[in-house]
Image (cartoon, rainbow, N blue to C red; front, side):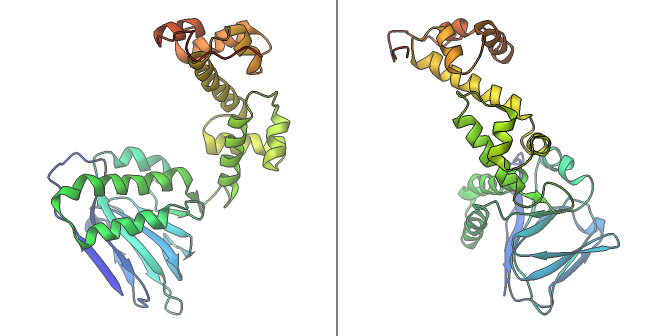
Length: 287
């Protein structure tokens, strides 16, 4: 089965991303593509839903299965094919756009990006929505289709896992869950050891992997979570700055004020003034 949808050029030329074509191939034992760089003016995304296939990287052949996929940049030679004995079920998108190099160059480094998407639970549904839009395309759907493709790409960039290196499959989800736990527990006295214990890894390994995945160290993320909570309390209570600092686990009020000013550009009290917070509204008794 081969489903192919081709779209007309969009009326608006400045979309961040827009599909030239997309489709769904299943049980195609002879599906094989080999293209030169000159033949490929678009980015090429393939997502494997089931079955097996291969993507060629130089002299290497990478085996793909359900929960994996690959992305070629524009102007890159491409070679990939389905396994004849266990043909893959794939969703694919060829696309272009104004800001794509800035989105993908850091991830791809001039090579095909081979990834795992097992943690991207929303991806199958988003791809199905894209296919539905292709069945009855009308011009008014341009913006919706561009936004849908952007959502697909962002889900993969943020949650897809690189099969060519770290992080290992499942590690990203563990770090994301740990980050959610840190945010929920940020008013408590958390140490690196506490955070590492929740993740199930050693302090050294947790710190290194958390930084790689989240883009900031555990202590930086904890501080950010506390400052976000501080803004919530400054806006919704008439608690003193000192009391808020104590509730958020800061040992010294002066340190809290200094970190808040560095992050926001003004003091907690100035934040209240700038936000027009009336301290008689949203009163909470200091406890």
